[in-house]
Figure (spheres, rainbow, N blue to C red):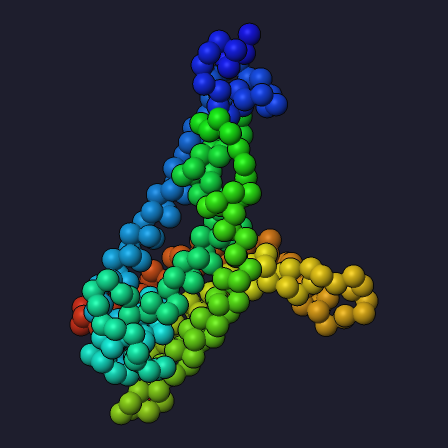
Length: 274
């Protein structure tokens, strides 16, 4: 007699149509460590990013370094650091509105709907499933066919906005080579910004949506040699999409932390040229 037949609420592998596994789980190893580590990593980034986005200070250093958490800085509050407002100031200055409110919601949507991040938080937070041979705690499964998970299909549109934001971040990194009074200079902060934006581009273009846009609708690759060449390169990057997803979380935090520490005067940016 199955668990459901005995009157106990069916769940996961106990539900009709799933393999009947009498044991609570078929794992004796520490299967919970990977999903727990994933949940901890994602939570740490969300907490840090949330605090910094609403701190509204220490976002512009040495009159040229703008942290990606505040790019583009389009709030009227950016007037405290006018050099940071590369594209004007038009959003109201309010404690509940991030200075980069024009881009952060779309970047958050891009990350949340990313195919890798879906797998990460489905397994580590939603527990669907947590690991192989571990029962799910959910009695039913509808996939991404109902609200709110059906909104995951908006990922391709978030991708287009992410491309624009990557261009903005690239612009920030380039203009940071010019100091208002000293002219062309190169500091450690410039290298930090460049490495960060390069890795962000790798994460963005290795996206599944980018791969599909480049070659997903082609019937004959032979008739589109340039797009086929680009598709093969993006496909190679796509195999490392998970790596880029985690690395860019780290570089975003490190870049922001560096700019914040320089802006606070905790550390001094080392000039290499100029």
